[in-house]
Length: 82
Length: 422
Image 1 (cartoon, rainbow over the protein chains, first blue to last red):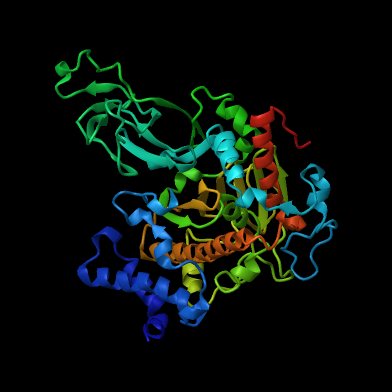
Image 2: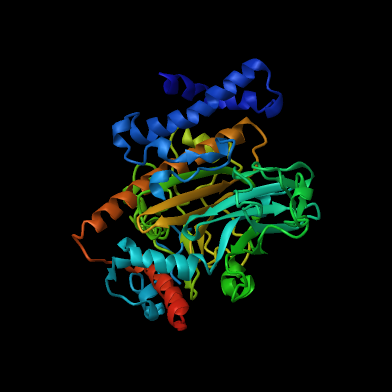
């Protein structure tokens, strides 16, 4: 799986990418960077929860909203909460 | 003081562990805490009128609006107010009620942005206000019986800044200055390089709980080995202790400060070792880092983990080595709230640091989501009426102080009296 494929290569991947300016990645390096960042999410799930979603009982992801990704920069109050 | 027999780098435990805080702060009480203030509409109304409409409220940090023309909008739901905070062309930060003086439309509809030329136009009829809140342009102004420009200005809101933290006060004339309001807690905001760590991430979550329950969950570390047993195993609790006991707690009348250990012997796993170790210049969650002044890591412990600075009523500043975040708990009603988290980290300079930052973000996000579940489960259970009080141990002194401080503030507003911590 992805995690097992990436782990032995992780150090080489980071060392390779560290030679580039992040804002000037050539296209292949940009793809590699995306794979590297995916590893942050995947690692958390694999190393902490054996990749078993049923073991996690936190709030559903859609209820913990990353408003830094929203153009408006915040949530409007849902009508039901008023 | 004797050194720890197992690990000489760990700060020795105090002899009075388990009773030291209740003996240090007897004014706060020791008995069960009634649940009424967590479930009742009456308490929400007191908190709204006696606290959120009267106290200085943190609404952000100056790094959110670095340039002239930048603005943020904060909805103070409990007070029914929308506040526009702008940086004017002279560099000053000012706050106004976010309401057009024409027919009362909300002037700015999003929550952050930039207005070229420091001009804020109303979407409804094109009235334009400047960074001093003055009305500077009205379409067809001659059709109004009287000229309006420079007369119908945005209603100003009292604003103050301490260590880069922006505060507003909804009283027309605040009954105390920000400096008086903050008092000694301000000394805990002066010794950390907040400004070197810009805001990188911002989360919001509407929660079906009283705001104080969510604040409580961010006010003690007793729960960490249990609720976060898988997300944060051993990140803070040291190898000789199953729990995380504080180094220091300082309770002020309203605010509070605490100092906790990290675990210098934490063993990250396979990939985590890259994120938290080799490539990390930034993410040292729970790991030891150098304290930076007397206001932070007050115990001067070498195995420092983190500090919490609580700014009454609803802001926690959580400070770790290389990352800090604010938690804010905005009441909407007695059992509804908006939980807001802003995470500050240094700008990453290369792929390794970016990976470390991403891992740190996820580590924090998924632990906080675990906290979120408890807020709602607790609210539901309390509203069932099955129990009428909660009990607290010595290390949960911040939770006890939370209810004490809220009650004192309401008493002060209602009856003009207040007890003090000696």
